[in-house]
Image (cartoon, rainbow, N blue to C red; front, side, top):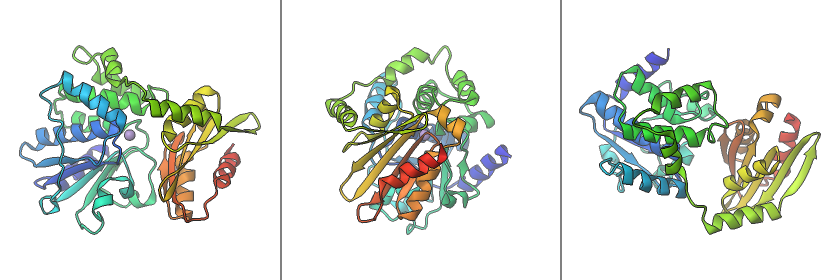
Length: 332
Ligand SMILES: [Mn+2]
């Protein structure tokens, strides 16, 4: 079944000019998946034109890529800065299932382009992305890089040390340093590490000094936190102007079971939420599903995983945070 999906995907894109892209503020999984997919396609098809487009890398990804380039100076980390869609036959979108989240859509109306797109992703599937049978979307993977790793395996394509390093870094970060890993995640990392790829060296690659503004956001997030107790569960609500996901993760480490971080942006509200994996497994709580449903109600944009999700809604809407708290409480 998987093999036929891979084969259908490849036969569709064969001899087409391919553009690979990912969500805005590219994280390490998005970054690794773009480069790994390009490497796979170039080796598999021999004569295929493949380019990559990034809107903007996240601060972490920028630091990672710089360190990575020092170790693999010959690795081509370049990407397109100017796009000519006349030269694109198909767009492959990795690590996101929402066209709204890809940076391309800010500059170009991707639906207006009439260029077919295929999604390769591991996030909770929204209805829209279920439509295309060519999409390679599997929720049971901790990272998109692992779906691409399977492509390499099925078609017996050689994995270069640089690509293995990228994929291992993606798996480690997207699984929260294995906190959200499943058995398959561990099997997959085992396939990538070895004589040429040292696990500790990847951890060093992933180390980045927290900058001052992030430290301040975390401290303010902590100062403003409101504690809601629901039975034995502790829910945190706070607000910061940026670094919402770092603040939410910090609150879980502090002892909260669920953290909701509210941020006011120029013309929208962004809500980032995190929940402990154990609680999701025990109660069936799925933040991604809740945010997706609320986003539909307010014509916003939301989704994610069971324990990690983001929602953006227009400031003009009558959205109220108490609705999220109620939905979470109902699930506990
Ligand atoms: Mn990912």
